[in-house]
Image (cartoon, rainbow, N blue to C red; front, side, top):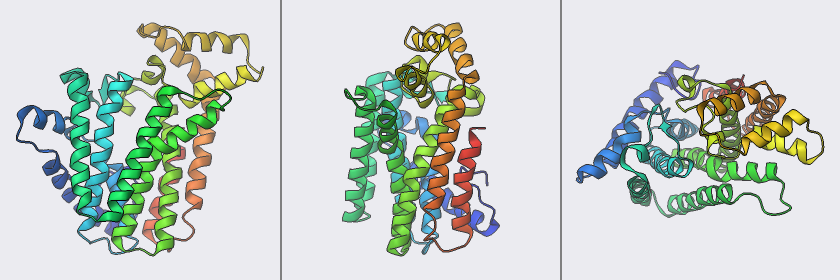
Length: 333
């Protein structure tokens, strides 16, 4: 089974494949609607596929206890619904033309419909998590709050005197890593794992989430659209901050930049609606060593994530999580 998490143990891979099939069926049921427009638009990103990274992390963490518990399927659906709902909103805010290799929903139905469908899916996730009990409801609501704050702080930018790089890392923690931490925590919780194991996998999920997004920052510049399912330089075109650009600006702020660096920042701040102008900026960033610095930063967060796994019992689950952290570092090479 090709997955977003490396699985070297065949028996574990088979179990997760079977459970992920159940998650997909439950996810399909969760997005269904009697209203034809709502049904079509809600299914759009689910049907486009995706790696199901978050539900797979939930199911894998569940293996640290009793991975066969039925609550784990619902927990996995909750985190994927939350993720998909956030993508409808993100793509409107970022004006992204593609998502998961398919046209973004707002390009098909318009911004208002895309936002409302995102809200609808958040509502479906909330209804489903209510069946998992009060602790899961509180966890889901706090995660949703962090995701909103991450998006808000990304939109507003750093305050006066705030380090833009540290601000960005906090945005990544809130906007992206919080849901990965929750995915792992819900899996370990509803699998019945020991409390120290639950805390360890949640801390792992938080750090691996930052590594994941830093790797995405590299791939937004270094990969082709066929590899990533996104148009290269989409974030640059929409002037969404990413780590390579922030590191470049940090050099200039410290008086360490060159004339070429100043020119590149000026072009980053300029009009990148022209494909040729965007391609030139992407090419220059590919050749710049700030891209290597971002790779190194992603690798450091991935190593720190792996370090959180110490309390886990040795076995295929711990091995798979450690391999995932290593793969995220390699993903940017």
